[in-house]
Length: 616
Image 1 (tube, one colour):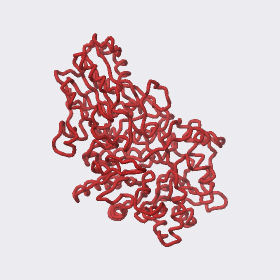
Image 2: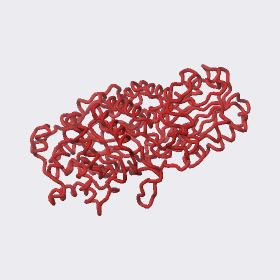
Image 3: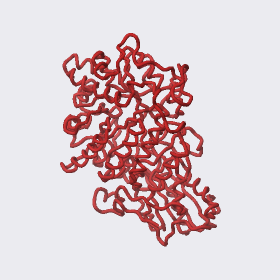
Image 4: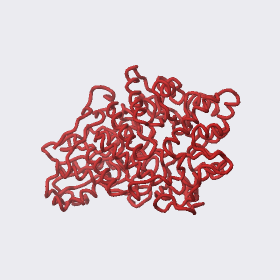
């Protein structure tokens, strides 16, 4: 989902206005509690009763979801939309600010004529990544490298606990994607290229969210990771290399991909998001064949949501035609950042014109209401009964869990002459931007859509709280008698060079790459110079690769005695130092093939296969 930037004044006004009254739950949240039903409507939260009393206009409002910066107080009071979604902007907010804002809208919803509580959705894909102080876990590719279903379940519980502190009870995760081409800018959102790994870890994370009291959303249905290079979507004159492209699949491949979603459904996942991509030339948002398969053959009882503005890219002469196509294909809720009210009107018009049946609308709204009922939001819209294990985000317990996942996600690719673990008493020269940059460690979908580098200011609100690889080395220096050198002028005094290379933060098609070389377009601009400096020192060298995919490093591998794939570890980068020093052991294995050149992608010619990973 593409994220637009939020105007700070608009967001702060949403947070600060109307925030006086009875305290709800813990912390500083101060929205007045409100009964579900007011005097002018029936006091019932049963799905059948609500559905029976809603007008067509009110039902259509349940079927749309707008971005929070476009939903005004007045429009929520008048229309009572079924959902509002979060966004990634220039400013993050703390948990109490988020919850104040979300509950303020909830009061408008339950006091409206329709009186149906709404649900707030957010891309908590590796932590509650728009909340100040929240723990940022490794991206999915790193979770796949760790391949520990119990820790992944615990991660789900932790993310749910922090999400409840913000009031964001619907998480657009897990991503059930098998990334097959590392040139795809969303590769790091995939646990693995292997459906078995994706299934096990995706369902483990989903169970953690559900057991923690948050609604997961399996995405993106389906085959988004199987699209072919060169088929990327063209939008507004911008050609994407691979993102949102077309997948050509055999019957066997389709069967395996659908099994992942069947497992999620069987695990209790109640929402599924449709993919931007196509299968055999048919856009998934218009693909009635496969969407209806979810509801009919796969027994999915929850509701289906579109991706960000994605109906804009399906066939149709205008937005109304596209709305009709998407709803008739089986999509129950339209994620429309800007045009949610227009789409609501189009649904009403289409029903009156006989282009969408009343039965299709009732089916969609019944599904939406049923999910809200089952998750408790119809009976407890102001979250008065919601409890959390932790009283605030960023607890030591959750940071320790994230650091443990970092340690288990590291993959040792090369260790000539047992260069690792770093020996006690070693003088270590640490170079490369990725050594000391929390933003690089976290990648995209962190505070902002694309993510950010520290840019010399680790206290900026664009950068989450966290520890870097260098922080971790400094913390262990005394225990392991290490001398940590960062001044290039003193590099000659070192016994070992630790070369920290990384990718610039990116998301979606902004990360599509022709070469995926560590020194080309997706790599940090300082990588080439750092590589050259390390080579000139002629010391034993260990390269750390902080990246969202298995980048091409073939031209430089012979220069390095050790190579560690760190993926995108998130806010607890000090976990890397624990493994480098031997405080913890290498456990990670490759979740996807590692290619030596782009020409070999999607062939059997691999540098390192899935499952490869050296140990001490």
